[in-house]
Length: 258
Ligand SMILES: NS(=O)(=O)c1ccc(NC(=O)NCCO)cc1
Ligand SMILES: [Zn+2]
Image (cartoon, rainbow, N blue to C red; front, top):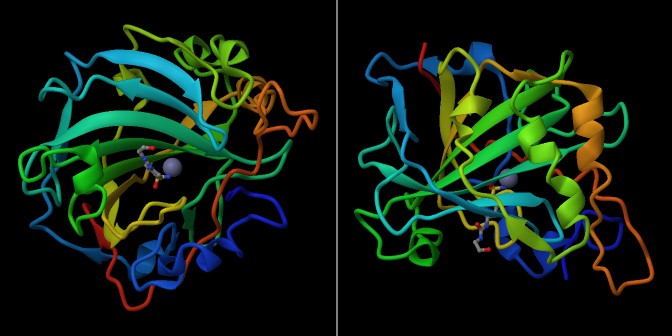
């Protein structure tokens, strides 16, 4: 199976997932000065007030908070999107102690971590699975995390991580609204890309916020106590550096909201 190690990491994924060498792969290095400002790009609008988080689980690659996406209770719309897209889950990517772990980079600089809020177009497609294989089926909102002061709301998540230490462990996680994880500005870059993990489907409209949120090294350290490995496995492999490096732009245009 795929992972982030020497033998099963991003440089090997193309063997089982040839689209890894496709024309619209993610993440990318975003070069602000080369992004084209597009005045037709309106603001993104997040309607998360009636969102219903269900559980938090360790899928062996990241820690994921899942939402009830059986109706349009929490959606993202506006910006480059033609329809409202339903929130399905969010998860993180991070580095090892002291080194960086974001997936997207900005003018070659990486952040300590990156949060992905994954949405799908439930107007046009009947399921997440169907949307995930369509060229415009998914919209992922990327938020950079930099280290500094404690984040006042992230502890709700980090306090639950000990419950999902091992791969495939899951626990209830109700009443969490990810709106508390947004920075003050919703200015963004947007470009057509892919899932950043296998199956690497080229089905994502990426919306990457320019402003990072600040979390403490202590809070980020709690993500690193998670394990890639399952409870029954004898090897205990710390979950860290679960990020794919930037991929070739291949002529794609990155647009800037403003
Ligand atoms: N890192 S990412 O591009 O945001 C991403 C989001 C969803 C997936 N896959 C997913 O949601 N599969 C649904 C069932 O596992 C993979 C990568
Ligand atoms: Zn991700």
